[in-house]
Image 1 (tube, rainbow, N blue to C red):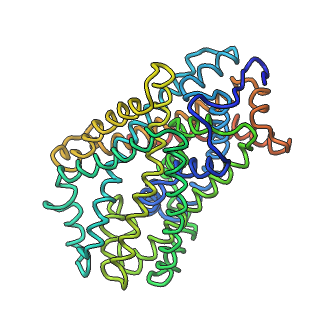
Image 2 (cartoon, rainbow, N blue to C red):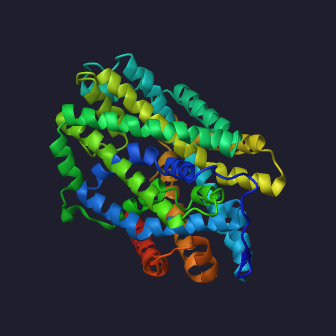
Image 3 (tube, one colour):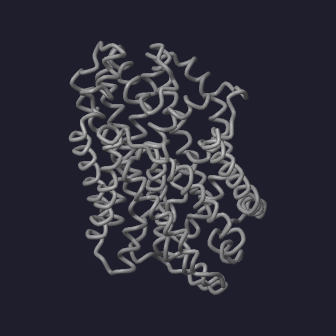
Length: 465
């Protein structure tokens, strides 16, 4: 089919998802990761609980879903890597081919994120044998903290961190190297159902053993006094981070989406599933935190100090603590395999690389960058970028708070104002005119305005405050 000068291929040269639900599992896997299980609970605690959750939900509904629909649509329209899809669609819209820079930025963001993502995932892998062996049984708070970040703790042992970082990277590269159906599909078909099952088991455990009412109140009771521009920026950045927006993953996965599938319905399912898992993770974690008088705003250590301490003092804690960190590892893996897919697809298209070699090159690049994150917790921890950030903090801020929102902003502007509307509508094929109009309004006006305002004010608040 040819519409408005844009050629729509039936499938990508890299392959196509065999079923709609496979794409939903894959895209949900990309979205559901450490952002839901590790990052969402601790940034919720740091930013006032329920007030932050409200801002986050607004960001998902008014900004995240419209941009995610646009990004998926671009991927399916182009049927190539994000870089070449952006270039081709721009040229067919009589616009500059320099729009491919959006794809380049997203592809680089994915590699940058994987570089530190695999290090944090490595912490979760390291904690599986620790919980299973009973190392946290009956320990004090000081002892639990020491196991994580003491002089002889996990973060101080860069050799151990490098081992788990390397192992996680190798497993990720292996899956991506096997291709769409033999690698990505097989992984998500097992990992996503297993992840959801583990999460529900842990939720039941939290209801029985934790202070569930207090945890739910923390997540859902509104307190306007906790709102700030920085909280809004964190919420927006996390909405992009958790939905994998602006990093090319969703555009790459969209390129493998069958033509007959409804993009809007599929993306809505994915967003609801992703948000639901994040909230359930909060309902798993905070009741256990409050039941033991722990601090919900404990930062990144919430999952690696407070929770193991809680599991160490609860009946069945060894088993359920082990299951929790297996859950975290599974969630991280489903996201990690999507982070280098855009770059892998581009190397195949641009240079004729084999999928295996492309995965090895980009996985190796992410591994090397990750060494900086490993060292930022020990031998380089005194080194601060701009006298503010460790290497890990700097990479996290650069990607989550700058590259991803900026990428999403440019995607909204491109689809909303540059791409030919009839080409976008042909690809979306929305049957309800009212929903189509609402999407156009959110994408053209609400999303870019909100992203720009929160982005600028959040950066100002971060450095001027």
